[in-house]
Image (tube, rainbow, N blue to C red; front, side, top):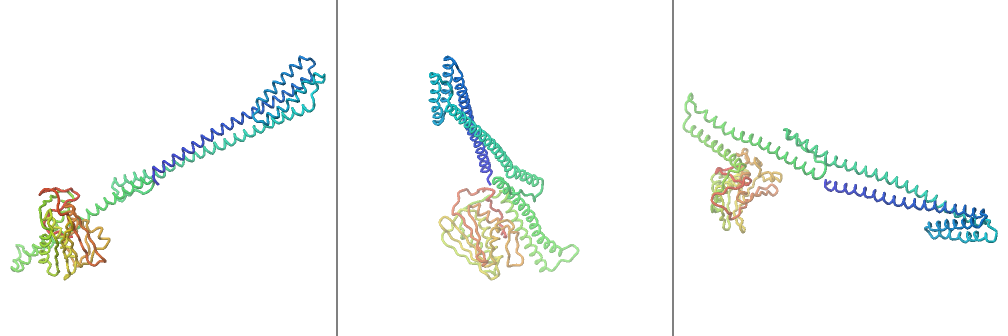
Length: 471
């Protein structure tokens, strides 16, 4: 869940609950006020009807014309007030129907008979009962509205409280809790615990931060493993030549007679091979260090990629007489590049093809051009490169299975080659269909801007050793 969306939805929900509560409060208050007004009006009309009945009885008891006139006037005022308080036509019609009977009663005194007729008494009682019943109904309605408003108020308050609690729970569950756990894992990692990883939980934004933290921690762990493997690999590969040289030197000591000349020549030849191997290993390490440190300078000149490939093929034909090396060229292969670095890449690729393929197999090298791009493909008939290894083969210290019992090198050749090509604006790819050999294709732009000495960015530095690097 997204933090922004969750907070927005929760805030809008609380706002709607609050707005609904306010609207319900206003409506219930308005309805209750109107009901109370109707209740007061019904009570007022009922009281006027009672007063009108009392005034009619008083009219009957009056013995003087003045008293009867005054009682008649008060009765007319009470009836007019009652009619004015009516709201519906039915209420008005009930009171207006009472007026003729009252008029008849008031005029009966002129005939000497001022007694209150039973029909008028019944009409006054019905009017009083009618509006008393209306008052009772309005009172019951007001009570119902009051109870309903109370229930709605309590319900809205509970709903609002639940919404606030849910909002706080959401913040704690998806924001504060994950942030605290993330901070704890970062503190443990900073304190020196390399296994500390942030739990991927909470809102999407925090999950992304946790994933980034874990990715960084994994990358640092891999870097540490690479460093340890780097040291172990370098020490291991340096130890064997040094041990061989030490053993060879042991044949010539002050207390022992010199071996025969032929044996001495064999010893020095072996010492020379081991020293060349040491020099190659040191060159590979120097290349990798210079790449990471950003201290490599490309010296670009106009050169022929086909001629560089031909020189590399010729070199390995003399070094590997048990392999068949074929070279094919097509089109113009002139480009602006550092010829020494490009030749080092070609030596790496062809050397790997020779080392990782059986004796007597074919190694094909093709140089061609397509528009402004030049390419070189090196194909062998070795065991190929598995899909899992293809994604790692250009990393430092990565090596594939070899057809030979022992292959020199510490797995830096392809890593250095890739960086050299990237420094020139090119690239390198590997393909291996069904394990039937491997094909490496390097691509270079035909021309690059720059001077004869150009320093390239640290992320794309090439190597500076002219030794043959090994994958």
